Image (cartoon, rainbow, N blue to C red; front, side, top):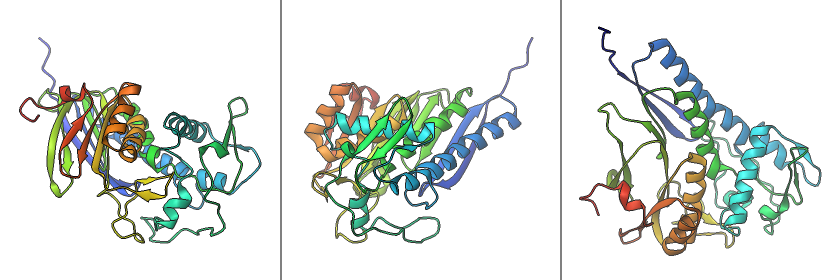
Length: 313
């Protein structure tokens, strides 16, 4: 008779992308294999940050932003990330837009969280830019910027890092990657149950407003409480690129999707659209979401109720 294997719980945390990234693994595999996989998962966050952060002077996206009017050969990972962001921008008619960097800079989002240094801001940048000023060449894998602009991939980069980290943990019986509320859960938790993921209460930092039960899915939340503007009173980082203004219509938007990059992008777009248009947008692409309004009412897509405990809604 074979001896029964015992699953153990492994937990690690590190600072990446201006947030605490926590990983939890449930597995009966050898300790050295688990530790190696977790290390590789964290390395995915470092790799994405070094490639996609506009706050790192030597990052690939910063170098791309500095070249105007000429096609630039970029790495496959940056090309695919910008292509994905461009497609979401096109799908949402510019509600989501990766060229929003110059607006974020004007709102004071210019400080590197690791060094505390402020990035150099170009005051001559035109505000009349959009995703349509990005030209992607699928054959050559080049990107051309038609105008001086600042690419900001903050609304997809964390999701991308989670998706890459997930690949390193897929072979374990259960795992969770939590990057400041942007989460992927795989398999089952340490009690062999679906994962319970709490959605933060907008007005009570250490409380949840509801709990989702799910597995093998990403959950990303965009909330107006996450990053406040250092320059605009009551302003936050979820800015409508069409108006340059952040809205207080809702408190947060949570999206459940197969991939974190998708959930990350659509939670941003849905927040900017507001609860009615945001939910309609999610329904149109077949993913689920939940909106917390300014008066703390919950609105959700038709299938979202399936993730909630029966006694919650």
